[in-house]
Image (cartoon, rainbow, N blue to C red):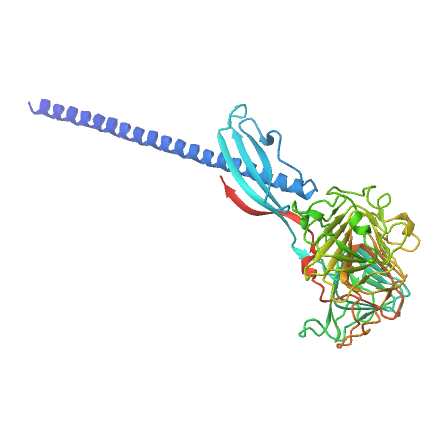
Length: 487
């Protein structure tokens, strides 16, 4: 009896163990299955998030591509005509589409981009979609300097003094005679003359500290140079007159001085119908002829020279006075056949811009007393006719047919600026100011290359106005993202 009872208890215990093992097996199997399900769900969600992020990246690629189109000069770009593929592999395919609409001004574009991810890659309907909208604006991160060159500033041997607040040069400055003085508060040069000792500033001229500074706390002229200063003193060493930082490798360069006319003239400006506004009136011409009309596109709002403007695209200004009360776009060369000596007046306190599709050929240039600021922007190429007198080009030319006194004018060219034996002065103004500096004769000059060969002291030397509103002349204009919205 006892043995049979013991055996029965053993069998019951063995049965309990088997049941326990079965329960544990089911439990752990369920646990493992649950973990697998959770893991799979997490993997699926992670993959979904990654592919949604890829869809967003694809949409942002469309935004970047549209902005790149604007910055290439294609401001009429309206978006993609079909899907653009940015990623294609055996599992997934990512694309984008964009549409572009005009903003409230000519400096604003609205870009809407849709990013799509097809999974599998062969699918015809996108599984993951992201849509974003961006406002792009054309703006500038820097402004002009009084003396600005995207390449070279060369000063001819007859020049005595050039006086400027700031000089910014991409290439190098060369002064050809030891009696030439460059008087400046700040000089920045980002390049060098390879054939002459790697000079950022070179030649036989002199650097001179001004007698006073715009900022009273400044006591020395600042030289910031990418290579050597070959004018001694100061050379590459600071002294009591100069702070010199030579051989600096991080100086940025001016990428573009191009300012499109629609930066300041939007669709509210209309065509005058012809260039007759410029040729009507004997001595005093109003541009526009009807005040406040905004009819300042001559002869229309297109680009490049128009043969219908002036004589085969050449507009002779003579010696008349032109009252420019609003910004202007004109499709002609100014005085190409015969140098002229116009007088300009801005009757307002605002900066007005004169966008010239061609070249400028002035014998002399003057502004009236009290004229507001005027910026001339010439898009034309360097004419072959100026090669002998202007070795660096002369798309904007200022000659010596009379004294030039135009402190209200800044001359900006896409190509060369040439001052050829130009004489500066005005009988109504003293040649020096109370601070001992020369009275400014120009608001400033900027271009690809600048060649200065002015007559010394006849009666003045070339001085550029430190108070000209340079902050309103945008340099390195480009399209940039201004706002971002996910739809």
